[in-house]
Structures are given as structure tokens and as C-alpha cells.
Amino acid sequence: MTAPAAARFDKATVRALYDRPLLPLLDEARKVHLAHHPDNEVQLCTLLSVKTGGCPEDCSYCPQSSKYDTNVGAEKMLDVNQVIASARRAKELGSTRFCMGAAWREVKEGPAFDRVVEMVKGVKDLGLEACVTLGMVNESQAKRLADAGLDAYNHNLDTSRENYKSIIRTRTFDDRLRTLANVRNAGITVCSGGIIGMGETDDDRCEMLRTLANLEPQPESVPINALVPVEGTPLADRPPVDPFDLVRMIAVARILMPKARVRLSAGRESMTREAQMLCLMAGANSIFFGEKLLTTSNPNESDDLAFLRDAGLGTMAPNV
Image (cartoon, rainbow, N blue to C red; front, side, top):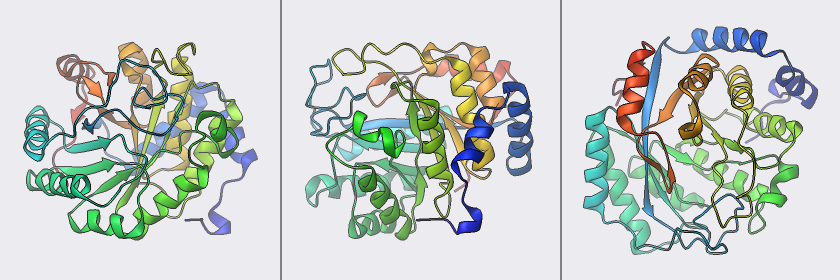
């Protein structure tokens, strides 16, 4: 999963890009975006929690961790028909990618994983891109998902290697990279990004993007999230993310990973329409669409459709 030496970005290069004045940075990001993607096209993605809560991991940002006392309790896994009904509704509203998340530390063989495989097949039968995020996955499990037709596996790096242990202690940064390698080797595209607003430094932000950009091949999908603080988690008292910081991260991601679909992800509910538009100008060309992102709130569908319409933006047509 490492890029050839000639293709690698060094720390100084990425930090110099990140430190550029915002307007010139936006100009370059916009130019890169237009060279690789259709103008004024936004992909709508819907994310559904198919197994909520009770996760044994201690990710400091996550209300689904069993380590913290939050308002998210452990729930039974959804059945396949419920998930397919949600996917069908998402498609009717304009989504072309349907993502399913399970609050697991890792995939384990058995009825629950068998059910996820059936969910993937059902989503594909609807003509949607299918994505899952299930925690760590080994090579044989990734192969089963690929055989079911899975398009993408989401497994975010979250932050830099150096900062990782201050956010998560129940797994390692190398565990993350190993899962991405297993997914890639199975022929599934990689969806991996991170979260800002967790107390990280600018260097941590740059290192996260540098690690992603130096993967070979680069991720096809890069979600950029702003922390949504949740009461009961260790990061509950973190201040709001400055929208300019999110714009800067998206612009740098776009320049470093020209062909990736950069996804404006968590944190949109607290953003103005103008801030979201700046993120799209910076190179984001996807939003998560629906009133929840797993367990945290998101703008409602009618507001998002009105925003896109007022901005003159079109939505991506199905491409399956």
C-alpha cells in the first residue's frame, strides 16, 4: 500500500500547500477539480447504521462505544428487508451510493456477517453503489464482500499516526492500514478520510492527508469530517470547527488526490449554506444525504435539495 518513491509527497510539500493563503489555494484546487471531474456535479450518498451501539472500541469521538455513557444504546441488527427498503427510498430521493455501517471492532464470521453480505447483494440489485464500514476486515472476508458485489469499503484513518493513540487506544494505526490493504487486495475500492476538530495540530491534519495521498493506488473516496461533539464522549467539550479549516482540508485533499471523490461529511448541520458552498468550490463533490449519519444528525433531505437547486448544482446520475 505504499506509493513508488517518485510519487510520494513529503511533509514539507504538504505543509507548504496547507499554509498557502486561502484564495490561491482555492484557485488551484478548483483548477485540479475541473481537470478531473464534471463541473457542478454532486454525488448524493446515504449512510445507514445497520447495527448500532455496543462497540468495544474506545474511539474518543464515537457515541457508539460501549466505554462511554451516551444516549446511544446497543440495538439489534436490522434485517435485510429493512435495509433494502431504506436503500430503495434513498434511490428515489436521488442517492446513487448507499453505505451501511455496523458498530463492530472487526468482522466476525457467522450469521451477522452473512446478513451483511445479503444486504450488499440487495443494494446492488437496486442499481446503487454499495459501501460498508464494519471495522477491521481480513483478506478472506474482504473477498466475500467483493464476490457479493461491494463497490467500496470505508475505513477512516481519522488522524495522523502520531496523534492516533490520543484518540483511540483499542487498535493501532497499522491495524487501519492493514484493513485498507486487505480491501484493496480484494479488488474493492477504498473510502478513507478523517476527522478534524479533535484537538489535533495542523501538522496532524497534514500528515493524515499525506498518508492517504501516498497510498498506491490512492483512495477513490476521501470523506472529510468535522467533529460533532457528543455528550458522554471524551471529546464532548471540543469547540466547533472553523469552517475555513474544513475548506482548507478539502482543498488540500483535492490537490493531493485529484481523481478521488472528496466527500463533505459529518458536521454539515452546523454549517451555513455559504460555508458548504465554499467546500464544494474547494473540490468536494459528494455529500451525505439523509437526516442521520449513523447516529449523529445531518441536514434534512428537503433542505439539501433546495441548497443544491439554489446553487445551480446537479446531482450525479446512476452509473452502474
